[in-house]
Every structure is written in structure tokens, then in C-alpha cells.
Length: 172
Length: 172
DNA sequence: AGTCTCCATGTGATTTTATAACATTTAACG
DNA sequence: CGTTAAATGTTATAAAATCACATGGAGACT
Image (cartoon, rainbow over all chains, first blue to last red):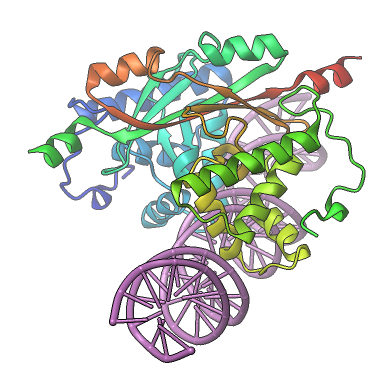
């Protein structure tokens, strides 16, 4: 009973990374990768943590901490904010989930296991979020940082705009 | 009495954009630019708005809305959140101020008048913020966006790390 | 002048997001 | 087992942001 279908009745997730794919498989695989990585690195993918990751993978869009908390409650877990925030802290700390600062929300990582500086495209119409790789140190920012002696440790790169699907709908 | 020195007793702002300069002049000039631009474009740089911009220019670091609100109250303005948020909305909307999403805070724009996609370097030790130009559409993100048909309207680029001054202090 | 309208501000209350503090349980390790 | 560390549950509170509505002030028009 790890998969609570009540939260995703029969809603189509047409745009996932702005492209269609076998989502059930995608979720399963991502969870497997996470399990394997935790086993290897001695991390504990506890039920709450796993559930939060699963929820984010299923929705495949940015969810706020309180939205996640509601889903957790539906799934029988604790319903107080720290429950969600602690799971999210673990997941983000280890790269399974990213925080979208612009939205104060969270998405499952699209490239688990790979070391990467994520960049996001956020559709302001449907809130879909696609992850790409960024190369912050290579662009003009990296050049400026080196020039003034600023040591970059982490980058936030988020582009807001309109995804192809919404552009189609709006245009036609 | 537009300049309330009580909020900046005699604290040195050694790092401004991580480099020293004549700060009083810098503040005055930036305010002049803002005045001129508002006059030209029919915008109203009202007392609250001007004060908020002045405060951000003086501090020259990221201030949260409530920190600004405290300073506004000290200066005799209204002390309820909307007062600060509305002024900030005006200032950000017209490019005089930028929001640092990572910090839920605001900084005065370092390049007022120029059309630009800002990028920020945020020191996690002293909270100093330096603004640089980013070229989001030219890097790998821009390439991906074009490839999938995502229309970028606005970008958030924020690098977190250690500024040269703090690196010196920590190292030596 | 009057007064109409629009925009900005003042203010109180509320919503949303996030953390602090502490008790309790669970898992790991000797 | 017993000890310890980590994770969870729960209450409370802090921090960030918005809503709703009343008040005031500058221009435009007559």
C-alpha cells in the first residue's frame, strides 16, 4: 500500500519535463535508484522519506511543503510541518529532491545519482517544472566570480516562462 | 531628515560588490538616476518608495521585508507589512530593486537603467550580495529551452558561496 | 473653487511557509 | 540485552506574505 492512487485520480501528466513518457516506470526506476544509492552510502530511506520522494515523482511537478504534508496525512503519516520538512531536508541534502526557490516548492530530481548543478524551467501557467543541467562556473557569472575571488559553492538557476504545451494552448 | 544614521551607527561596509568605493556618492547617484527615470516614465517615486530604495542603497546588502519595515517605522512611516511589500513591489517591478529568492530578501539594483538579467553572488558568511550580469539564454540552459520550446521570460541566477573578504578572514 | 477619479497609503486580520523545543520511538552496535 | 544515536511525533511559535477595507492626496475636468 505504498502507492495511494487517491491523490492522483486519473489526471494526466502530459508534460513531464515537457515531454511524454511512461511515468509509472519512471517513478519505479527513480525509487530503485534512490534505494540503491541509500543502501550503498549507508543512508536511511525511511518510510516517510520514501513516501515523500514517491509523491514528488508521481506528481512530477513542484509541490509546496504543505501540499506534501496533506498527502502524507492521507497516507497515514504524521501531519505536522516538521514531518514534511525533515523528509524534504534529507532528500534535498542528498540530491534526490531539489527546492525551487522561486516557488517555495520542491521537485524530484530528474538526474538522481549524477553530480550536477541543476537548472529549472518553470511554466508560470501550469506550474510544470523541467530540470536541465547548468554550467554556472563556465558562463559570465563564473568569470566574474573568479575575477573578484568569490568561491561558488552552490547555484540556483531558475527560468520562468511558458512551456511548449501552454504556449500551444494559448496560441491556438 | 531623510537619512537616519541610527540604523548604520558607524558600521563599515567594506565590501560592496566585494570592492570598496565612495558609498555616499554611490547612494546619491543611484537615487538621482531613479528620480530621473521616474520623471521620464511617469512613475511616482513617492516618499515611502524613495525611502525603501535609499535604505537598500545605504545598507548595500540583502534586507528582508521585515527588516526594511523596521527601518521604515524608525523613519516615521507606516509599520504594517503591506507598506514595505508595496514599495518593494513597485521597486522590483521597475528594476530599481531585485529580490534574492534564496534569502527572501531584497537588494538595490547595481545597474539601474540598464536592461539586464541579473545574477547574484551571495556570501553565506556575511550575507554580502554582489550583482553581476548573466546571459541565461546563451548557456546550456538557453540551448535546452530552445530545443524543447520553452519561452524564457525571466531568470533567477544566484550563486551562494564565500566572498573574498570572508575567505581571507577564515583562511588567515 | 468643487468634485470625481485614480492611485497610494494606513491598518487590522489572516494565510502561508518554516523552525524551535521537547518527548517518544525506532534502529544500530556493542 | 543495554546503551547510544537517529528518526519521528507533537505542541508551539516564528517568519514571510497577502487580503480586505478604510483613508488620504494628487490630477483632470467642469
